[in-house]
Amino acid sequence: MKRQWWHDKVAYQIYPKSFMDGNGDGIGDIQGIRSKLDYLKELGIDILWLSPIYQSPFIDQGYDISDYYRIAEEFGTMEEFDLLLEETKKRGMYLVMDLVVNHCSDRHEWFQKALADPYGPYGDYFYFRKGKDGNPPSNYRSYFGGSTWEPVPGTDLYYLHFFAKEQPDLNWENPKVRQEIYKMINWWLDKGVAGFRIDAIINIKKDVNFPSYEPDGADGLVHCTKMVENVEGVDEFLEEMKRETFQKHQAFTVGEVFNMKEGALEEFIGDEGHFSTMFDFSAHQIGQGKHGWYDARPVEFKEGRDTLFASQKETEGIGFKSNIIENHDEPRGASRYLPDYARNETGKKLLASTMLLLRGLPFLYQGQEIGMTNWECPDVSQYDDISTKDQYQEAIQAGCTPEQAMKACRENSRDNARTPMQWSAEEHAGFTKGTPWLTVNPNYTEINVEEQETREDSVLAFYRKLIALRKSDALREIFTYGETIPAYEDQEKVFAYFRSLNGGAKILVAGNYGTEAVTLPLPEGKGTLLLSNTEREAQLQKQLEKEGQITLQGLEGAVLLLEQG
Ligand code: GLC
Ligand code: CA
Image (cartoon, rainbow, N blue to C red):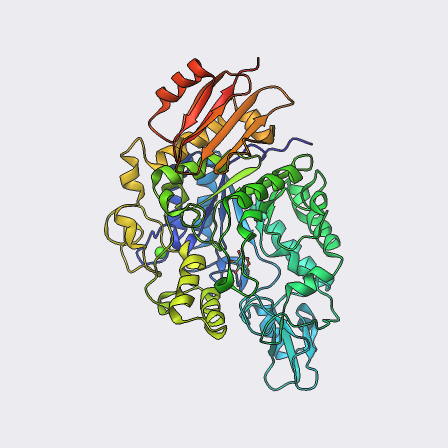
């Protein structure tokens, strides 16, 4: 594999609306982000990914862009952005933007012109089709519920939207659209951004005949991804985009790729792949409901472990995936992956150590580093997220009681991760001096940055140590390029693996997710403790020396450098 500048980096996702409010209007902004750069640097972050900051009506929180060349007023000005970019670079960090090009906003000039004249040149920027026998052109259900086809008033036409009706899909078959997109990407790259996180990208290739499929739900519709799975040819678009843009700038790209065809990994993230890397969502997808959040099922520990190992193995000779515990679309990892008895600082540190030392780029999501948790939202009316509102209705329609529907939302809502960042125990968690746009999680008085800064044993302090370990001169190479070898799989509640470089130096990462102690004999009988999530480091080291094994208490984790015999 060719070495790339980004291989050994650690990334952090900022959700701008909820990160830090600089001007007191209750909405996070660029000025706020700038004020926290030193905090991020100290945490050990190299790459910052900003969720969309472009001009937008915010129907889907900025994933509906009305002007790709402007900064949303809510977030600041282009001057402020330039300053942020400069300040980021000064600190040796890289700025990565969100690239949302499957769709734009219905307020975008292109769509406004298209609506005014669907048969004119801009009509072909989107997918306008005639209905069939008084019905929409096909029976697809959108990601946010309801048909993907929205009637155009005063005509017999519909337009296609895979997400909200305010997010019309762009017609990638039209070369003019592709050129517009490439021009825009290059404009940002010329400005000096390091690359892009690429949104919902698998959806850009459509079967332009828009065939209907067998319904998969009581609404008579079928999820639009059915068509995506059945169409060929996304590769040509992705290759062209790369050639025309990223490649020329050696940009870093991370794809949000769902529904990839089997065996296509190399085409996506191999040396000559479409992207630098893509997110590993494998663990997040297990247990997902067939029809929605309400029919999700609990995930067995072993299933999660097997899934992650399989993904590591699949990726090894090919490239690098990007590993996440959570993001702005997922619930908080501490609430999702930790059993009740582990929802404490020890459990959160354990989760961090076993996840961040896997092979692949760690992507942290804001607040993860202090162990922020899901939001016990009291009432559905308090949710802001479009998807949560839809999922609540889906649940009700499927016969759930309001309480059951709320439970599904509390567990899965995207707003779990979107509540404001908890900086301090001050009013509104120190996020804003105004009224926050979304409720602050009431647990901010206990879980916040300021408090954790004062403690050596905080989750934040642990994340700092963990990242520093991963990036340390002595171990950077093995943590970056070493293979992952599953270990102690016969232990039911242990998530453990070796990282090994060319069969040489070896590291053991071991976490006991159970409540009972487990003893793990070391292969060569010798090792040095590098890090643990408990206060028992001295004891563990002593035991290692005396017995050539370690006993991990419930929720204890350890990272060891193994000596070769
Ligand atoms: C991606 C984004 C999500 C957004 C969707 C539509 O999945 O992560 O937040 O709603 O694309 O752009
Ligand atoms: Ca603000």
